[in-house]
Amino acid sequence: QKEVEQNSGPLSVPEGAIASLNCTYSDRGSQSFFWYRQYSGKSPELIMSIYSNGDKEDGRFTAQLNKASQYVSLLIRDSQPSDSATYLCAVLEFSGGGADGLTFGKGTHLIIQP
Amino acid sequence: DAGVIQSPRHEVTEMGQEVTLRCKPISGHDYLFWYRQTMMRGLELLIYFNNNVPIDDSGMPEDRFSAKMPNASFSTLKIQPSEPRDSAVYFCASRGSGQGVQETQYFGPGTRLLVL
Image (cartoon, each protein chain N blue to C red):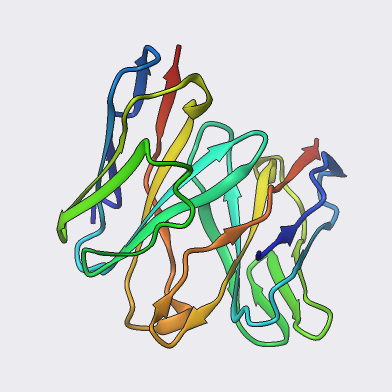
């Protein structure tokens, strides 16, 4: 059974600092990796995706992938109070006949302290 | 684009009643997913469709749950009879297939279900 593990937190980070969120996954066949942000009472919203080993940067966000270690991370630079949310790591295994649904971690609750 | 549309947004019902949740995917998307989110179990995939055909329903908790997709723009998730442990937020999501593994999955606003 596919598993995605995240530290549930809460992770408290001062405003302006770097927030580092981590995720490990069990299925070596996983090909795509996603970070979703979910505000309380709202639906998950995609903020980053990564498919190859290494770093991918988008504005204040950097996703890092290490398939050998089965590890994905998300860095948020210059953290803002509006970044306070639950961050969900999700993994997709794509098969020749189609794409499975995403397997999600339980999320890390991030709090940015003003 | 209106995004994924779900109805109702909130549902309160009594144990034993039938509950029907509805979803309209983003136009042109050929994959549709139903998820359930609870504090204890997080976000779990229940079932997904490709081109209106159910592909994997292994996440459906038991026979009380059923899902249909009669056409490309509409899907239902039905619980009959409902039980208090079914209380959760149910999300519908859709995605295209043009970019393979790089396709983004978009979520609807969810239906918050409370079974008393």
